[in-house]
Image (cartoon, rainbow, N blue to C red):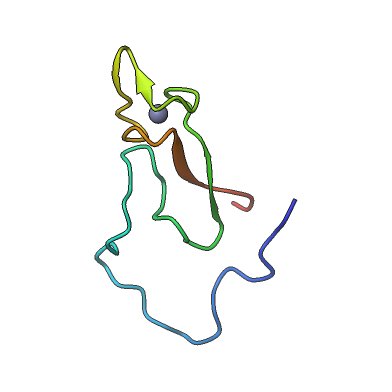
Length: 72
Ligand SMILES: [Zn+2]
């Protein structure tokens, strides 16, 4: 397993209130690339990206969701 050595960069950059253009799904807990998060198989569809014969609403068909890992 890998763990980030720190949860924030030392640059002191402000967090923007609006989300970046990176695609996110309703099941995501954070945008991709957020420190302390990682992609995991969607619990709604088990990674198939489909549920009940339609695109999975939790991962938006990607089969993966971004969730917080470790800590808190
Ligand atoms: Zn899904």
